[in-house]
Image (cartoon, rainbow, N blue to C red; front, side):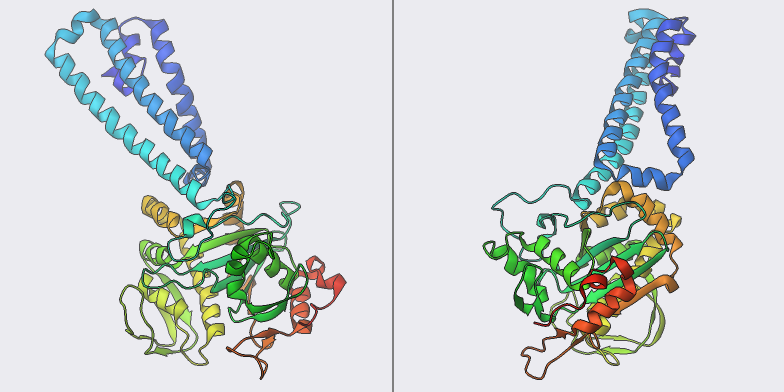
Length: 438
């Protein structure tokens, strides 16, 4: 029993002091490390465990400590009563009961560490897709999304960070393009400000960073690049990140792909999110998510707490006062901010196991895991009033009378002016001028 409580105590009680020190020392070291981590706070522990290497190491240590406790119990019984101890039924019954407790507790803790390992390997992408692999084309391909080769990395921790956010529709009844939602989130660690810039999916006839003009819509660029490597040697996701950065005037450092199906589960897990709807929505043609057919969606103007299904309708519906893709993009920005506030609340820690499971089905990102804690703290320091939000519809893009399929064309001078306004000297337009007209 003593060695069950702390390896080495049974040996000490039996007078085997050297053996007691041998069994106690590894556990003492592990305990001191654990205390040091606890002093940093549970949030630091959670974020640290999202590193796959750390999580796997913890799982292995937990398993080894379980084996060590069992060996210490057996050795302690032998030290106290010799081999005859194991001929006594009460001793064997006690050993079996305590062994079962060790197995249950260490499997539970080690399993949680493995959950972090699983989440870290799936959320934080580190390896590019193998050469010749089939590019993602439909709903279930979040895990197979190729990794964008970085066009640039922030030169320092104080430098601006630009992240491309992709929205993925994963409903079993839909196979929408992977990039119907295109949003750049730009964070300045020095000024504690952020900007969210959404690119309409109908943007077309824009100049390419590699030269020439792309005449299709921007939401088809990634798929086209994946299927035409002779024209786009960088591949789909890298081509898209470079092009978005070229048009916006700043390099894209990382990407984050968000699966809308898991997004719904995550919102339900945190108890819903609160938003202030600026305009009433009445969309009788809304097709729902899990149910086929048109179920409709209505939401009045004002403050609402949305569950997952309603939040999904809020960011997918195109109807409302002035309703269109531009309004939908603004609502997407609004909901992402609301969810970020909810997830950063320490009260969400008890929901951690479920959130980890949701996150593995919701997010894939190339953002470095070792900067996650820094970004979380930075996000808390940026109030809503310091987040600038733009949708590149009118006046930054317009619909020419001759453009088919409701296509949008960028207004070069206005895009370059916005880029310089947001990014200053970081914008390439500060030195090169406006993007050339197609």
